[in-house]
Amino acid sequence: MANLITATEIAGASVYGVAQMSYAVDGVSGKDYAAALSAAAFKEAVAIEQSLAGYSAVVRQRIRKIEDLGSVMAALNSGVTTLKVKDTESSDRTDKMSILAEAHSLAAKYGITVTCVAYEFSDGVYKAQMRRDDIYRAQNEVQYAIDHEDNDLKQDMVSLNSAMSKRDNAFSAAAKLVKKAVDASGSTIDNIG
Image 1 (cartoon, one colour):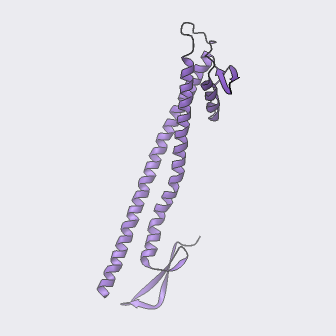
Image 2 (image 1 turned 45 degrees about the vertical axis):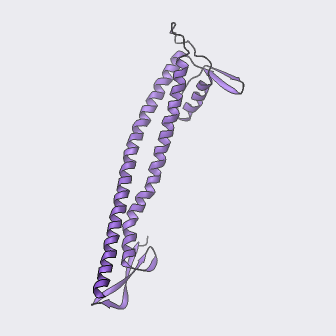
Image 3 (image 1 turned 135 degrees about the vertical axis):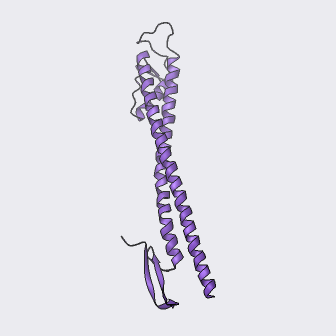
């Protein structure tokens, strides 16, 4: 791997006995000190910025999963409301509902089993029916998955915020460093004037 910055002495060029340098920045020669300094200073900030895309993608996926699991939970809760109130046999069944069929498919996407005992296809829509014990088991499993994903999301958000703060600090430090170098160059030129 080539060096980001290489310095080459300019033959026969000196100011008050100090050799003058030319810099190659990322393979492009003929750059001055400020260009070399800014390339080095901003390299870290740019690297952090590029890593933020990965963090953001993970956070978006986790949010999507939580939303989907929330939809599954809402469907299961709707199914529970159709169960008999007086008889609480585990074999009681919900009404046949399209949202239970959708919940079954959506939960399977995340490896969660929503067991439906009867399906019906009418008017271009799938409807499913669940037993009382299966729907309560599914509610517990979905709630656990939501809680687990929520905890992971919070940790990822902390990591994302930390990376964003590091990026902002790196850009700020780089900008200050480059400004000092430019100011120093301007002062030197004014003094030589």
